[in-house]
Image (cartoon, rainbow, N blue to C red):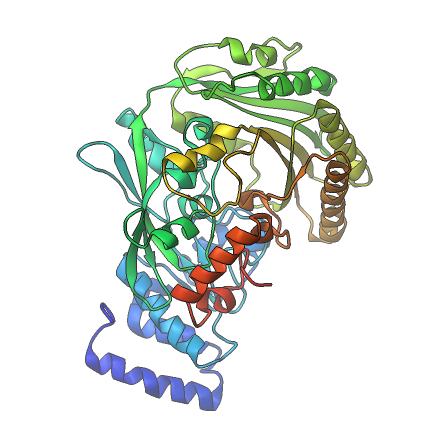
Amino acid sequence: MRGLGSTSTLAILPLLFSFFLASRYIGSISLQCTSLNLFLGAKVSFPGSTIYNSSLHSYYSQQQQQLAPSCIVTPQTSKDVETAVWLLAKIHALGMDMCRFAIRSGGHTHWPGSANIHRGVTIDLRAMNHVNVNGERTVASIGAGATWVNVYLKLDAMELAVSGGRVADVGVGGLITGGGISFFSPRFGFVCDSVQNFQVVLASGKTVSANAHENSSLFAALKGGSNNFGIVTRFDLKAFPQGKFWGGSIVYPVETLPAQLGAFMALANAEEYDPFAAVISSSFYNTERRVWGVVSNLEYTKAEADPVVLRPFTEIEPQYVNTMRISNLSDFTLEINESGQPGARAYWTTTTFAPSLHFLIEVFNIFNTSIQPLLTVPKATYALSFQNLPSSVFRAALHTSPNSLGISSSSGLLINALFTVSWSDAADDETIMAAAKAFTRAVEEGAKKRGLWDRWVYLNYAAGGQDVMGGYGSESLERLRKMSREVDPGGLFQRGVPGGFKLWT
């Protein structure tokens, strides 16, 4: 095994294991943290330290911030990740339940345990945030701990772009391995479809490349397979020329909702979907201001102001706020980032269905009914967002290489619905989450009744407990399970990493 220190240091490990087996604990620190600290030194931080506290406070949701790992590993290089995984695999092989760890890129996923862990090890990849572009300007190599604004600030200056996240502070690693939707998805498919190569550390502690020519089955599995196969340390993404373009958001009174949904469906039902157009249409209620509203986030990835295809949105009146402008990718993702509420409690859930204006209205009515008992919850914001997934998104994999998302290339346009809520008091958790789950059940039942429901669940919007992997379909799921057995026969990333969406439940 490379990069694990001197022979004398390696010799200590069996003794440490034996001591732990006899005592079960070394003071209050688990074997995994003691072992990691022995090999990685200052790259392992403990409760109370500045690095440890900074890592916890940087998670998006309060629920994630409140978990207390036994230690946090902050690798600087792929070799550091190799060392950490190799040690954790050795402990896992002893059959001890104490070997539990989490993998964190940006830390934006809301539900507790998805990218952090209580009384285990969190591997925080954020120091691995490099962004390098090859000499031909065709590939951007990006560290798994980068956020999308890190990427875009560099690429904007070069008049380049990659297909990536739409929120500045979202991490590269989680978004790509969960599929990923971008402003460029109608042209280039899911974000994972733009990956040229993954550098990934497997359960053996070995780093391998996965691409169309080398480990091609693993390459496909990592496109939507999340954290089930290893820790991706670098993504090589297709880069393309991209200057400034037109985008922004418009806020309207809720009375404009029928016109909004009509415009949304007109875009969906167009004979040919304009691949430069991207729309997120959201309705929201804020309990502090006691106000309803509608916001349309509009992007047209050309430097063409007010294109005809988006005028059904821009011509709706009245408008409270209008930020439409020609600017760069960094700017637009920072704008969307401002609508988030980092540090608050958060929950979101999602579902997918075929287009129907009548059903969109019904979904809004279900949303309205679901939140009525929650309107007195202090400092809460509820939102329902719709976005189109045109068939060109699903066909993109035909021109690159397969992904694992399980959506047929012959699928027609689908609509993704996302319910999000943020609030401040943990005492309201049970009531809010019950209402959100009831919303999802009601929407799915309504969609099934009308023959509109689609099994696919977008991983990056899903709540813990939603059947993401099952939504990929039995064939895709079996391929993922087969790959897991091949690269992780001991089940390190299935049982040792409890967070995320697992292949066996």
